[in-house]
Image (cartoon, rainbow, N blue to C red):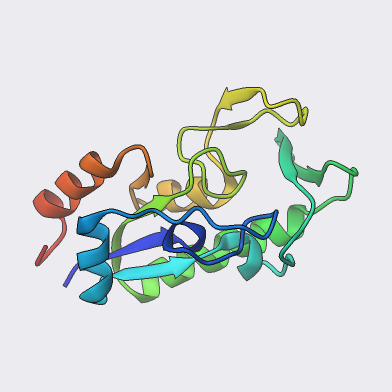
Length: 158
């Protein structure tokens, strides 16, 4: 049965930087959850960051630098979380991922630009990028229909 990696906050876990969740109620996701097809992961907590925690944004990509709004370097935690997220996806044979849009870890299309001003830039977050570079498609919560279509068409035993 095909499995889907999902940002833990979208499943209701209170792991966001501000201690809240981003619970996503969708009948197909609820059915997949009941079938044991969803694998929850929060890359930032997997990497050792606490909840709540200071907001963080990617400052530079080459070399990678991720800092909090207080200028604390959290790059090692983000990189570790990204690696562990990829391992989890591989261990569970996930065919794709559903991750939180705009997150510095999970965003698949755009993230905040590093200025802590709310400005967006076109780039993936660290964990989403790790998954994408390793052949695991990443969707966000605004792409549920595309996710369902992908799982139905391309994932074994969907």
